[in-house]
Image 1 (tube, rainbow, N blue to C red):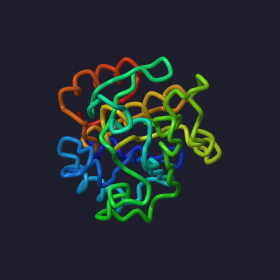
Image 2 (image 1 turned 90 degrees about the vertical axis):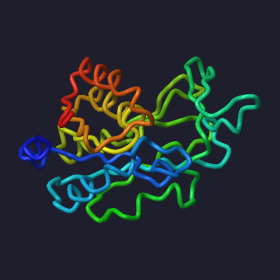
Image 3 (image 1 turned 90 degrees about the horizontal axis):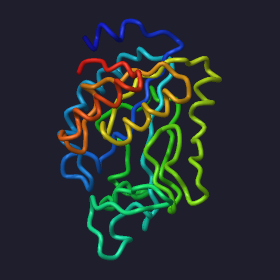
Image 4 (image 1 turned 180 degrees about the horizontal axis):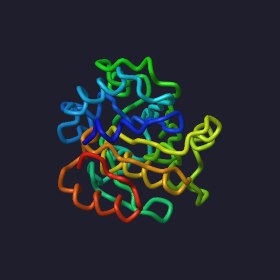
Length: 215
């Protein structure tokens, strides 16, 4: 089904590869469930060069980022607190700039990628989506500029894959829809932090009008 869906690709389509980095792999600082299982299929997809436009995102946190549980006395990873009026999950320290865990996965050939969007660079603001940061202290969600970059190239449809299915890929899908892009979610090429969220993720994507491929 996945291969059949990819037959409709044309120059108006872009592939968005979200946060395929060492720290999200088994044994990493913030491992996704079976995160490495997406690597063979994603490698094949990149090698086939079906997409005229390919974007990768890269979590790129400074040390002592506000989303790290280590920055909040009395809190543990995966606890939640209020940040700027919204719930913020606190994470293990991960994808710290210039560390091996922050590198795009070395087993993949990233040559087909046209643009790398680094996110989470502001120590005060978390950033899940490829399109916009999370809510900041000024009450806004600043854009990454990705939507404009895609529109300048005539893109009207995006295909999403990567990590984590229930966080950064999901938020990217939500913002892609909000920005007016036809959005397709390559389910087999994503993995969640925990599979316990899969039903809720599917329901959320369906309500948004995202096409789920291969689920």
